[in-house]
Length: 322
Length: 229
Image (cartoon, rainbow over the protein chains, first blue to last red):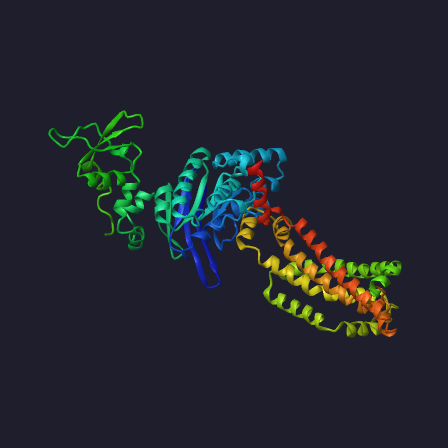
């Protein structure tokens, strides 16, 4: 869906982005991750040409974006920024209708679309359509920001640290909410973040940036299990093995092999969707070496053995860097 | 008391002078809005240019009005308008520039850069961004500049009576030359009252033009009302 080849950007003598290539398949979330000043936001802004590339090509759905008019290109891409940037002089409805209006949609059609989208982002249209941005909480504003970016149903969304300004508790909520929305709309998303937990949670693929270059591009598990360099290993953190556990769920390791006879009785019941870090933590907490995995209706799914969890971590056997 | 009686006895004359006075001020401020707002927008994104333009407008403001009227007599005499309404309007127009240009450029350059980025990122053209986002947000500050220009000019217009522009200044001049306190006070009083009234009226207009989303207190009141009904 998006192919970036040999993209570079220099500002005077400073090279902000150097020879970046990556491709993102349709419907995937690709997170551009890295410390501040690493070129990830510049890369994102070159995609909708808020910043003009110095060299390299960007293709969206096979089309070289350099051939498109800059305004047309921007209107065809959803764009969400950290500061949200809702227009305070417009109601929620008018904010969502900005791009449809620019595209000359019929009024009734764009209004209907605004109401639909509020439903999608879990805000009651009857209550919120006529409100002004100053009447919304930070989290509500960002939901409207997402709805606004989705308004003209663009196939590609660019998100620049969209949840960075939201407090940690609400950030988790809105991340889950966004993943739910994404399952519904299936956009191709490029998402800038400096939060490794956010990246591990949401990404299908991660491009880890360092000094304007991509240090490693791969799935979250690739980066955690096989960091390509010293920098990747240190950025992913000393606890990257534990972070890998968060990417796996108990259903992934549930087996039909019962615990050995004479072992301790079942004390722990987990759900199929629980991540393995949580399960392992509970197992260690109660001194057990296995747990029962039952679904939400209490039906038996399998046994989760501590040994199987540990075996999973050994899958990507020897990491290249220690 | 005598002054009040004078005003009542001569209300015909006074309304005529009042009309002249307001006409000169309204014309000058109206023209100043037409030039000052675009200039203010144009300089808002260029810090260097902004400094020079504002410095120039400030210099204009420091020229004493009597001197400015005097300067214009020889200049405008060439085209036959040395005295009267024309030089008066031109002088007031020049005095209006500073508050209007300064407030407009401050309002536009103070707009949250995130809004500008969002607008550009969504594909608004410069003109669309100005019309749909930046100007509506700048209204309160631009209007504050217009109010300031109007109040200043209502005062300065009194001096324009010296160059035959008419207006309520005529009463004051006559009051001085004839040592008639009633006329002097009547002129001064009416000028003060219309300056205050104009400020209030323009404030009401400002409230009307300000987008509802910027007025947090009325929004809260509206929600409370909705909640109770």
